[in-house]
Length: 92
Image (cartoon, rainbow, N blue to C red; front, side, top):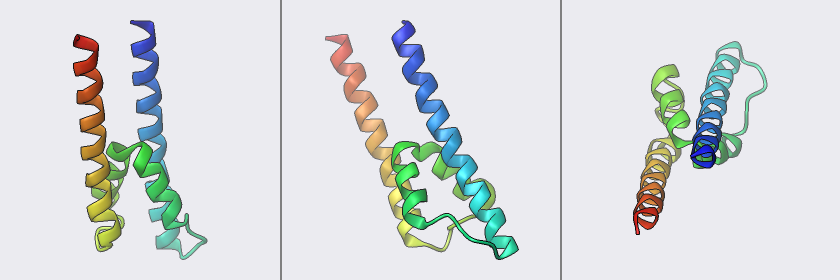
């Protein structure tokens, strides 16, 4: 049980970091400052897709970039499949 809670905590932390990165990048975009590279945002979104999706929706950031509107939901689907598989294997 402790191991499961630890993993859930790490997943939540990664998603929170991803969300914060989208917020920071949006703020920098509005101010015309140096930006977080897209590959960094996508890398974090691959690890924390729920935070990336929330960042896109909450901050209205990267909504016109197909690279983000397609890959972030795809990352979410991959995470769902991985979690479902792990749950299924633990039930065996």
